[in-house]
Image: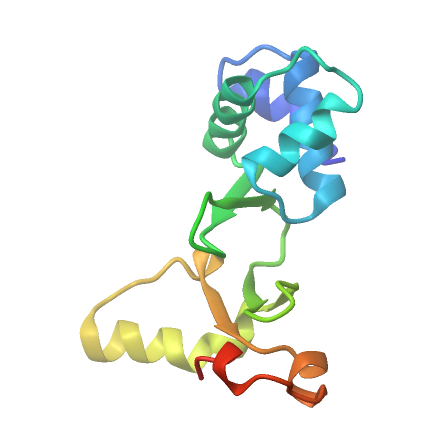
Amino acid sequence: MTADWEERLREHGFRITPQRQLVLEAVEALRHGTPEEILVEVQRTASGVNLSTIYRTLEVLEDVGLVTHAHIGHGAPTYHAVDEHVHIHLVCDRCRAVQSIPAGVAASFVAALRDDYGFRTDISHVSVHGHCRDCEEAPRHHEADDPL
């Protein structure tokens, strides 16, 4: 778990609570999880925790820089722990796998957005949808299932 999580919370005026610790541990265990998935993980240990507690706790953890979110699908945001390596999410629309790749892969794209359009982007919220290598190489049975 993030080594300085307790210090980060205190620096921002937040108390250390068991719920905050459980949510942070769940986010780290899942690597990428929706609030509902995080709830299921937390309830393995603390069955009394509800979804509103998860949302409030995620907001606090994001405010202090311990977690961040990306919009990986059409539903709720997906949360993951903040680490020193900013990354982009590759989302397979067939098997739903999520792969994290170094943000540096998009460096020229980010630079072009900045230089050509004056737009500075937060690449950590980027997700790219498509098909993973395994799904792309797998035999396809129904062309109608593939919108691309």
